[in-house]
Length: 111
Image (cartoon, rainbow, N blue to C red; front, side):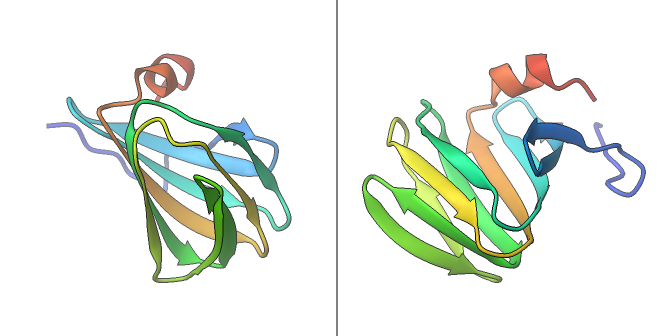
């Protein structure tokens, strides 16, 4: 069994203002992210399905050219290979789930 204690696991910097803790299984990656206010997330795509869940704050997200503002309790589903980007409007807490596992994050960000 693999477990993680989010209270004692140190966060790592994904991008400026994005502080993340990862949990990887065989088929998915879950990232727990605390983000400072007014921080952009650059446009990108990847072959993974992604679900973004906003726990706290407001996050402006553009997915496939369509922009929306996600608030606490709201989620977005991002299909594989679709361009997407974002920006925090306030400080945020977010959980992102990726399938299959993000091998790039697994290699770059060791627990």
